[in-house]
Image (tube, rainbow, N blue to C red; front, top):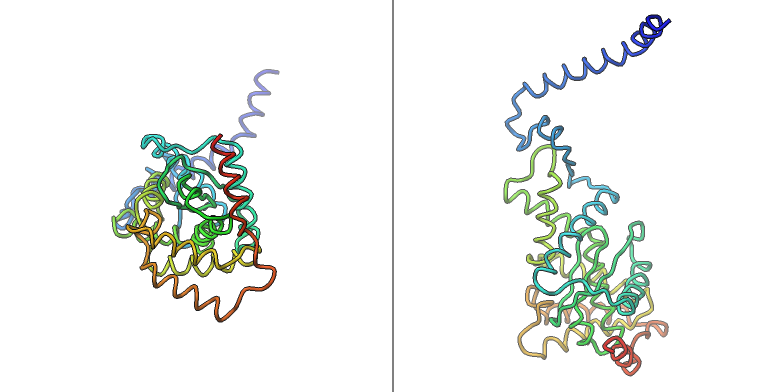
Length: 289
């Protein structure tokens, strides 16, 4: 009885075994074929279990997945600098409420967004792919009202909507020789993404594009669009540009472009929210307690 059972089991598994054998043979032929244009062999990828991202055709799901890994490493880097992501629940909830309101008014509502406060007194904000936006505590206190704060957040969401980080990553990978025919491996993509978020500026074209996208988003969310102009002017008058603007295009050019857009399409009666400076300051004082 036992012998018959074993024989029956072997017959049922024979097709699976032969299929596996054929697959291994085919793979050995691929590995044995020279691949001079690929930085990473298919065999190495199989052994490492590495995911390859084709940046020219990155899906939303892949972008979010990559953004999550970049976000984890950004958190590690910020901790090392002594400016960690804040665990202040009320402040984080407030930033998230503004961000989700803006994201819902964006042209890219099919990805999740995460908004975080960085415990840094410097005036700065940045974003990475996959819906991750970071706002320094110093920028929150520099803003005169919620609309000014929202204008910066709208600009950063504009970078995500425009997929600017994906384009930058491709350029960096090409420049460094890390981009193979198959695409970019996961660990290299994360390293480039962290560097882009923390150290490398956007191009002049990307910044103007994020201003345009952000202004439209700000208006659809009901915030006063004049706040984007007033906040830029305020920072410009402060002397040396803060980190948020020091690597961006000339602030005067950006202000002039925004003013022209508002002249061509003046604000409506519904686009006046977020200008209450007293309520905003009271809220910040509560956060500091």
